[in-house]
Amino acid sequence: MATNPTITEQIRQIALEILSEKPEGIRYSDLVKKILEQNNSFKSNSIAGVIVNLEVAFPDKVYKPDRGVFRLLRFKEDIATQPDKIDTSIKITKKKNINEDDFYQPFADWLVKELEECTNALTN
Image (cartoon, rainbow, N blue to C red; front, side):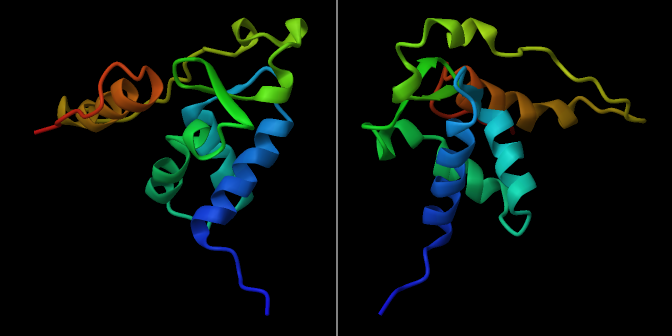
């Protein structure tokens, strides 16, 4: 009797599929967005929790060539797709009435998940 894959297994499978299409690798936040695009029934926090240590879950398939960047091991030796080709541009959106508090959580997430400079960041 076949069992349905768990949400964690589904997220990991989608992440691996996305990584297979990105030989240059992909940043953590972009991977979260791509997974949400493929299945918007997942919660972004669930996705984030599952993929944050993707290289630990799949040490034989995934590695981090740089902080916050995931890449499949099969692309490791491909010189043409080294991580320096990753888009690091910042997208700016306008929002009215921006408060300082609006920056706390995104900055904490960026420190922990993108830069991997710390393991925990408090926002209060």
